[in-house]
Amino acid sequence: MHALLSAPDTPTGVRAGQAPEPVPQAGDVVIEVECFTLVARNLDHAATLPPGSVPGFDAVGVVRRAADDGTGPAPGTRVATLATGNAWAQLRAVPTHELAIVPQRVDPGQAGVLLVPGVSALRAIRRLGALTGRRLLVTGAAGAVGHFAVQLGRLAGAHVIAAVRDHGSRERLAALGADEVVTGLDQVSAPVHGVIDSVGGPALAQAFDLLAEDGLIQQVGASSKQPTTFVPYQMVGRRRAIEGFWAGDRFGPDLAYLLDLLADGRLARLDGERAEWGDIDAIARRLRADDAPRRMVVTLRHDLSARPDADR
Image (cartoon, rainbow, N blue to C red; front, side, top):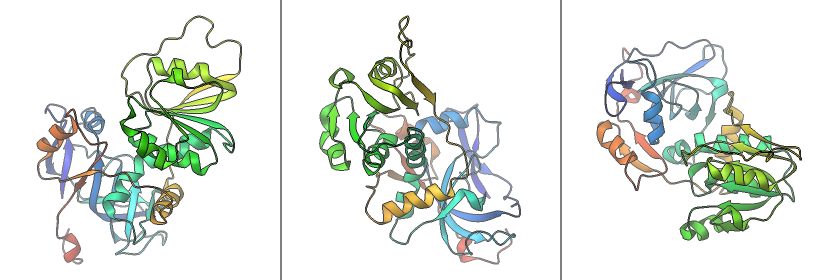
């Protein structure tokens, strides 16, 4: 089958090639991949993998072969999948507990763009505990995780403070549910109960000072690419914590929840620029441009679904 393969010796970190078709376990479905999403750091990660392996985390497609153990959806069902590896290919085998059915009202590309940042935001917010009536700070709120963290924080009953680099996103974030939009953490008054941080660097230390007693920061990213420095005794005197984010696994129920919110209009979609996967070099250049999209939807074209009995 056609696939994008890890190629550490190339400028993009991947190359187009052929990979063995997946051999499913009893609890796996095999899907014909329609699309997956990319950001530049996905390509950077792919370059760290063994040469010839198939990278990727999320993929949306149609079930070609149901799970042998009787779990999961039937052939012909469109599903969203999230798991480590083997996503950038025509076919993907994935355990049934790592997928959810895509509602008919949701476009496959919109579903794909939701998966990684949506689950990251949802699980990070859960780690903060009860948020009803409490203040939630979201740094890097203009990014993909921030897009969903603002909305999910609002749904959880929090007073949401969205921090961005400039005011260009103010109206959009207010429409998503942000109660306040700030361009610097010096504009935020303490205390905040929780922080979803995707910036890192000096902002992380500054956010730490805003935490209430027993407050928690979930660090889900480090877009600043800067180290964080704490002054002596900054972390002494109150119970508060920074926790590194770990996505975990068994994503199926969370994917279903998020897709249902999207289908019902309770979660605003995140638009992704679209491209066909034939020219990975052009896709890589676009993702590394100064005006790169927050996520790119890479679509596949193949005729496997037209040949259900073809020899694969």
